[in-house]
Image (cartoon, rainbow, N blue to C red; front, side, top):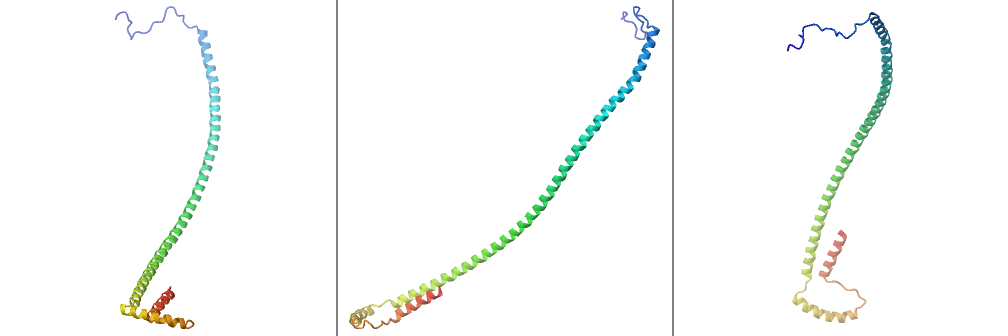
Length: 188
């Protein structure tokens, strides 16, 4: 620890270093003075270059901003047009829905009417079937009538050969069946 000089002690100049000469100091002072005088215009020129660059960048940014504003205006106009188109489509859709509901109601009422007509036709067909079966039951000959019809057919065969030109009269049962068929055909 004794080898190191104390920290509070002033530094001693080197014995080998030569002291500055008075002419050199004045020359250095003059060079520094001129350097400072020349430094200000250089700084001003550099600042001017930066200002020009900023101004041109500002102009390009303004051009880009105006292009972006134009794009936003076009997009806004397109959005407004699409909104009006969407509202027109909504109105058209609502009219189509109304027409569809009217058509559904018309189809439902038509279906109900057809079902009623079908029921009426079913009832009429059933009534006709009952009338025909009743007439068939009436027209069915009993065993006694079968014997009479055989005798009358043999007698009528001889008489019919004699009366070929005379019109044939129908029995009341046959007449009733014929009238029922004619009524059925007229109702259709």
